[in-house]
Image (tube, rainbow, N blue to C red; front, side, top):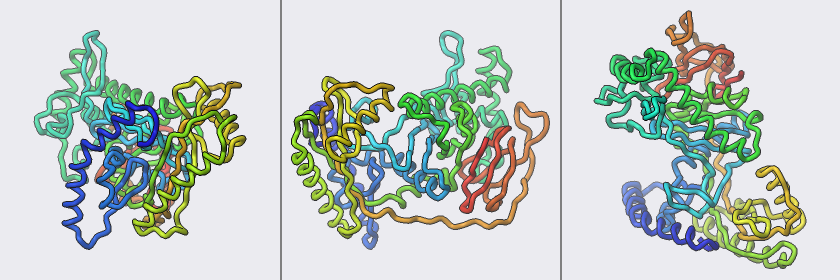
Length: 467
């Protein structure tokens, strides 16, 4: 990490030394087991590197899984003609939220736990809210949800593996939004009695009925996630109402409509293969490198030739790395950017490099967008950056038929006087539309279509939701 800030640079180097040997050993065993395969490894920045070199810079892989999910969401968004996405990936323990505005947003100020990681990685915000988040009564008598999770073992009470504490998954089951006989495509039967016992004990302590407690758990979990989505959008000067909310992960579909309503958004997307979107994203990621170097000076005094020279050196280094991985030079693109700040500030904003005058003006606009104001101060250069990438694999997904399916049954949900239809996602056809309330079940997740929302199925099976 050839950048200033000694602490962050030192921690990044230490993390690389700590995980590097473990990662190199794993990758070597993987390569030995697949001698005829060309193996690429996902990096935290949303691009890939060859396995025989990735282990040397293992710190670039710390967020590779979530980066795969975002690359999958980006590709699905392109296919659905929804390039502007707010994403939330809700699993069992945590929820990752991010923003995609045509391209993935990167940061060099990320953290893993309490450790700063200075290398470029996808810009996301993570909170302890997932299907396994535990609900409890705090010392003041208030209902709380998370960040402690029941994990996979024993898991939520309804898993029937000995868990006794109520979770978000148990609450969704009690409200009728999860079907006991449709979990994992019917391969796992959920224990309703165990969920009722766990949530009921909490409700008794709170003086609430079983259903009131379950509804409160879900509402509180939704508020935690909505707050996280505001951090990644509203707090940065971005109006989420012009974006589409994309949910993935095993639990995301149960909460997508409520979160969109909380942010006054009118469009949502539940991607096809939403439960395994990270795997799809890894197949859609290009080879790439993110290179940087500290170069300081005010833009009123620094020689532009020195900036261009340093950028050219980084681009040459990146192109050489991709050529070693079999990428033709003619297919490699290089994008230059700079980290800028007003003199006296501690933190920077990254803007594309287009020459002194246009880059200075771009920084003023970016500062006004992020912080609500611009200053008549001198602008200072801190770092230069080059993103070098190969061609993006054009992964396509099979089209589904236009035959319209029909509900496979009805179910009673808390808060509704009449039963609501249950749709099997694999039976839905291209162009099919229906209105909420409804449940849409599939092997790896369930989507709750709330009242006031309409669902349309696109050509590859994405669920396009509109309020």
